[in-house]
Length: 421
Image (cartoon, helix red, strand yellow):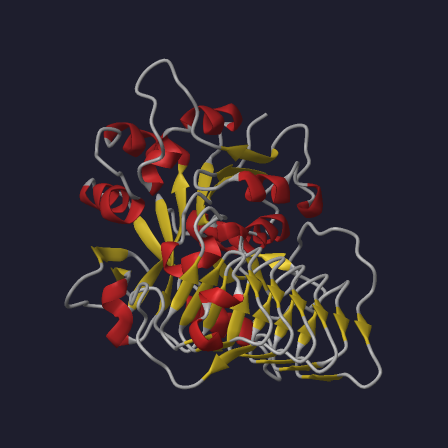
């Protein structure tokens, strides 16, 4: 049975700029907004847009991502024909290799796409936060007679050199495509979302199969442009966030707490779906305080939570205070602990009267490129002992003990990373 359009969802990235948040899990599987994971957004967009066949290309740390997706029941993608299918690299008769670039990953799965013989293929990234109607983008593609359509959105001019930039005429036809130009001629940035006529895509991938680390922005799009194919832009003006850094990840969570957030989890249409365990209802104890926060199912709040996003099955004990923080599933915050501007990953334990986020910012001694904000970042399954004081722009991973903190302190910019985690 022929499909009109299928989606290929690139979800194999490490997300190294998220530091210890992605030390043991692929970036698309990182928790977001309490109960969700980042990959829930493109998967839900597919369902809401009527795209019922999705190949999910995984590579780095895929186990949790695979378990989360399962057979796609949560997104109504458990289909006998089509549905969602996880596509890791696999042993072939010759030239077996890992996915070496975004386009190379798609090339290695031509057989999967041929199974459905689609008219169009939608290429997606698994690590952005947004809602989009891909059907509207497809209608735009067909109406214009496009062979390639690139979703794009305006960015501040001073940031344009960080993106692939499209230069288009008044009708949206692309006259030039520049990958991270030093002197951009436009501020219309590619979102890494593409619709290709399948015959064109297949031919391009085959032609470029020997290009090292073959990538859509660096190789496929310029190839199509040089061949004289019709490339158009589809301008997107709603909320879109690349949560590729600790700061942008934290900011995107905090934006959910605004009076009228641009990303609305509560609208009846275009809902975001996810796979979660069935948990007991949340519990807010007498004497606790919750101010402008999101609290997921199964959590029990006995202390104070202010301007924070709290995941499922979290316990915040009496006298504990959590401010301006993202707390993921299964975390335990003991009595009297005080946490400010932190990201605490799943199943970690913060000891009694520990203080996280004290003092002034200092430059990181671990990785200045990754850790460059006031945030305290705590890896999953980490234990922080009672009574310690932890400064800003710090990273902690592993089952730490009092002896790991000289004089009971971790200065701003410092880190404690226990090996073997």
